[in-house]
Length: 295
Image 1 (cartoon, rainbow, N blue to C red):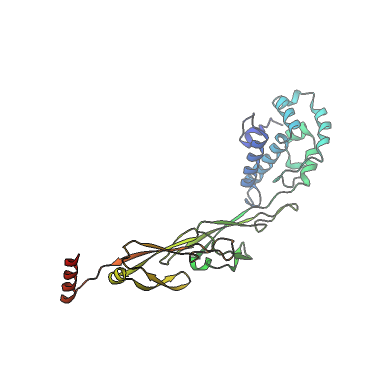
Image 2: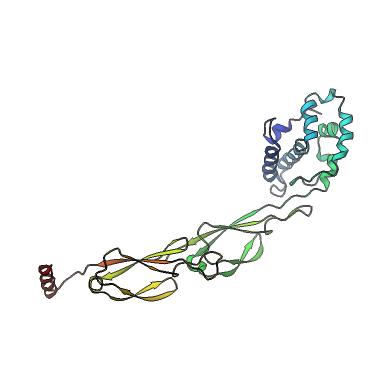
């Protein structure tokens, strides 16, 4: 029945706070949990050691006894008294990831120092299921309007609604669709990351869209009408006379849907790119020459 260094097992210093203990415990419990390491005896052993360390260090009274007598526990007269005091903790608060254990799951050191009361508490504790992570690739046109889609996660079909306006790289949480909880513990959650492909002529910046429209020199100088593409159709615009290259116009409400705000849209910004005519005829050259003389 050799001395067991519970601080070393959790990888924390002896002056660790309760928050440090809880954080270290949860991190290691997830890593070595039997559900994530099936048929791995070493992981199972490590998981039991982690839980035993947490049983002691997460309770102030237990930790105090351990800190005072742990190294010289064979010579401490307080242990019998500690067993009696430990009875007070049979109904104490539950800890996530403690799991189900029988008498053989605790070391002789633990049994000698703290008795069996904590073991009784552990049998009924429950822990939350594992969170799942998934990626979903969509075309930008797919997220212009809300729609439903069926996903298959761990051989289970899940029907979800994808809201219009979701952004590239955005992550949403589907509550309760992760791993199954143990001992009636809550299920984990499903986190979905969206990869949005954009093969259109529109550049998206949050809710606004940007595009470039070619304008011939004559229409730029004299003005007129031009038909341009928006994301969901065509519109006719009136071009002002003497429009300069690089001029930007805004079409209000013709951008992308605002995420989870039904009926609200960003704006579409159009930049005019004036095209200089090429392969001029002799007559056109003559006219442009005359025009240059007028200027």
